[in-house]
Length: 261
Image (cartoon, rainbow, N blue to C red):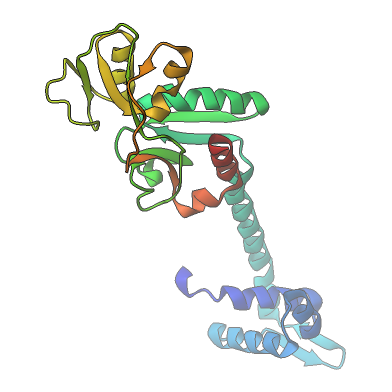
């Protein structure tokens, strides 16, 4: 019999009835009616082509065919329970795998993970670089950070930010610094790969860069950079994202709350 055709529900009812030798007590355990138990047993007998129970003056008895199959059936249920425990083990795991663009990890994520880890020394993090799309099935990810107008095809929560801000080092050059994915700076003095490098270039005095305020905030707070004008809203921003199964995990929800709280 193919696995897809295994009468698993009927065998679960059979196991309960065999343990109790009573359809009534099996029904109580399974929270169904005795009639429903009887129907499941008859359907299972029809599927298997064997008689599983006989009624005698002393009550319900197992047939030799039923007794012959019970040890393997109960061993199988124990294996199912082991499989469920193994699959649920990740819920209590203290290890989290996070994918994020390199500059987000350096400028924003790392300091926050340090604070989170200080509050819970048992936590462990695996950090992966993901400057473009991420594949949750291949990378075994728990959470990712992406730049965009929304979470894409996943569940997600936006990271609060004031949008884009133009920054420069006090007394630094006035030339523009461009980065891939940033505002168009056709006449830029320097072109770099990401917003983090644009911030570093501005900090070095190479010019001004218009970057996500989220990433520039530490350098602005430390006085290494100054803001030129006010931040301006951006349709795009950084999102914490994950497929629904990962998003529902307690450890992922706790991390999202800690990162956005």
